[in-house]
Image 1 (cartoon, rainbow, N blue to C red):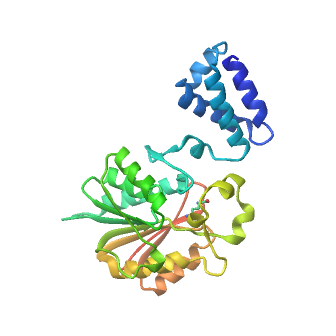
Image 2: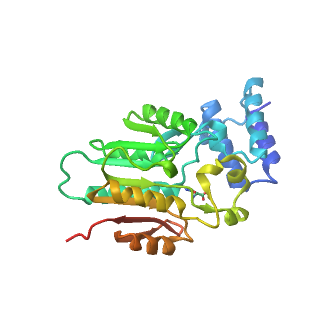
Image 3: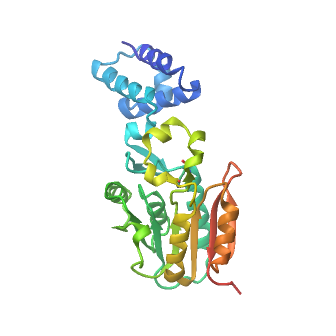
Length: 289
Ligand code: GLN
């Protein structure tokens, strides 16, 4: 079988399920990973003979794609904020909007003048570790800790910290049962579960079938549960000038803003993602002069 025939078979098999640009992008990503061939090299070598072994690997990936499995889980890795991250079914696939949250945090932290001494960061519900690790990488003098309730997710996060050569202090804890955090922080960040059960019907099969429910969903009756618990902890464990950052449900930003205000948080700022959806919020406990 030639490369051209492999591609034609791959494209035809997936054409009922995915748009053609997406199929093209799957084929390119798989070729880069399995054949070390770039898109240009694929185009330039249509007659290249494909080994039986390669055909088998592509066939396996094809079946997984036919079952709606995300390409990131098929390969076991993805990229976030320019860094490589391992992912599996115990971790969410990092989203571009979370990169925007990291970008916002970095621009704010770099604006905070006169940071002296330790700068302590805590990421709650770290999953693959993408927020904690990209902050550690870009704020090399900070001390970054991260919590998750899932031991399996923490294994992935630890490996990602090693792969990216940063030190992050990971610990296992269920934030809903945590009364006390280990220390005081300059910055607490979380991308907690925030999708309401009622929103499931608007979601894609690849998310619903493969990504961890526990990282995504909250009950319709109490969608701000994690925000409530985390902001209570933040009240006790943020340093006087510390900041709290959250990724948020686009439909709940106003409710959350009101809640944080009632809790005594100040300088509450909601920020939109590139799709113009209210996607992140920042606040702190003290009025700046
Ligand atoms: N933004 C994610 C999604 O749309 C949800 C992430 C989360 O619940 N924290 O699937």
